[in-house]
Image 1 (cartoon, rainbow, N blue to C red):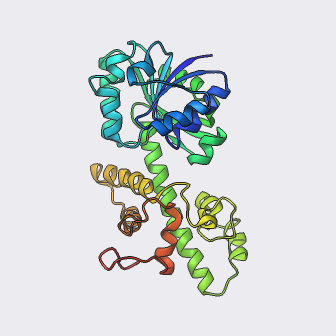
Image 2: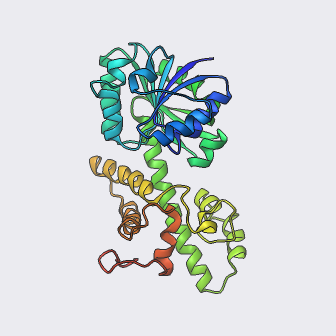
Image 3: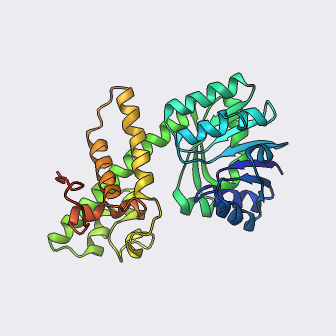
Length: 307
């Protein structure tokens, strides 16, 4: 069993570390949030008071952070991972961040004598709890192989994606498709209702027909159809609109950097931004259905034509 340093114990990092503890690993964790540290400690993580304490003498360091700026600060800061961990330590960043930041971390880690992989995950909070996440791992083949051993207790799928930043690229493109599918499910659900179709009958048809998608099967934004839908619980978050906006924004930024038109993706980002502008950024991203059916109370400034 390994000794693992972990930075970032929030909605994803907390349950992920719990699964590592269940598998017999020792996890030394750090987070700026005292509440997150306390919750992780209750699940068997050893809380630490700094990044340096978390990474001292460990076999591998994991990070799970909100944005590229946070990842850069944690790795590149004067008291960050590269300054305090033992050279040669395997570093695994499971944050979802921009390609430029991921490349900067790969370059800095290599220069400082570390092995680094970008290893974002798909599966959300429920997958983190269940240990059924999909890991997309990019980097040098030996480091990817070693990282794959450590992530086994948290995953159902481990997929090497290629060289540096390809894990992030896979995650960004996957989430772009996810949120477009979610918007399509929202529009289809509302139109079906207004055409007189029973909501369950329509879902039964779409879920075994060409309209099927993970978003339809898991996040269907109509109450009383899919047990895992946030619509059953007043859109309490399983994945917030704010995070969805961040993730699809990464795709839009990558598209602009590569001269790739994302007309649909850019429009879906605008939908999430409208939720944020209406002070609903903390609600589940599937709440965009209320932009279709007109039930969201938007300010005139936030509202925009749906088409």
